[in-house]
Amino acid sequence: MKTALQVMMEINKVCQFSSNEKKGEKASNSELRRWLDQSSVEVNYQPIKANDPWPPVIKSIVLFPKSAKKRCTLWWDDTITLIQVKDTE
Image (cartoon, rainbow, N blue to C red):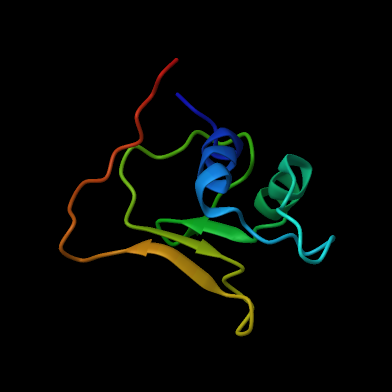
């Protein structure tokens, strides 16, 4: 099973999250780890840490849930009942 950090790194390859530390650049893997460990990422309405296993079913992914300015919902759809992460390990 993949960890939250592994999946966020894969999403970052496609979405290219903007760095908070280096303006105008893509967020580094270390920065993604800090976001996760500082509860700046919620999956299925719950904070997730870098080494936590990624849930098999996703209803929402929210970055910076406590910030009105930076809050970003990556996925949320009531019509989708099952979203699975392909486990290639």
